[in-house]
Length: 299
Ligand code: GRG
Image (cartoon, helix red, strand yellow):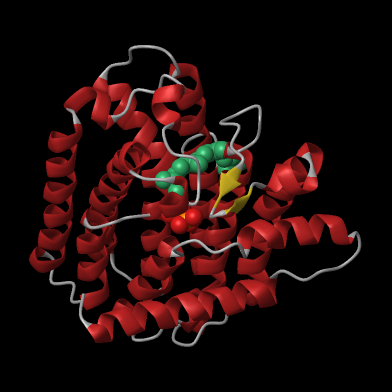
């Protein structure tokens, strides 16, 4: 990755962290807001909101109008991690290199912090989105963004993926079921990130489809790499407990295809994502670098 792209990614990350800090206040009762802030501000790669900002920028020349949505998606992502880590789900002690939310605040507050983030996120979109280029269409665009957001967060996508994942533990499932889990647990948020960035940037249907196709490829590549890292990395590298998939009897790409073939599939999906950008004339060094970086991910 060249230095200019590295700098741009680091600038995006800094901006997202500053805005997340601004958007989530501490007010009465402090415990719930602090617990929400604990998980959202705990670090992380901020990949999803970066995708939102960059997609909006390449289409409209500006990412300003996408900042609240980008932050809302990071809140939704953090919410899904808080709930995923609960004892009734994956039962994890560490996330993003820190103790999980329920380990610090207790289970009931962790459940409520996730719930609170889920309803606060669309509030952030509605209250903070400022339109620079297309004031006339803004109510309609906000509605489209909210529809995308609520669909991704609900029983058709994220929750569907999680339910099938939990139900599949310890069972031999077909590849179609594994793909369903990946598409909905992980792919849905990558698509949401790029589709909302595109909608806010004024994309036409053709461009919306192009970014959706790119997001699908990198979403799957990202999840397969996540499965690979679960086998090959340490707690320090990952910031969460490794080896959980096998311990919980989860079927993964590794158990279907083996480590080497899974790595090849990641490389192929990342290349397909870059090809989509070229074929559909989407010029973004950042999106190209993100696709390539998934193949080289270490955490
Ligand atoms: C939306 C109401 C509602 C519930 C959510 C718990 C749940 C239902 C879904 C679980 C989704 C989940 C945990 C998917 C895993 C996706 C994944 C690969 C997470 C790790 O993402 P990274 O590596 O994390 O980008 P960082 O910490 O860098 O942000």
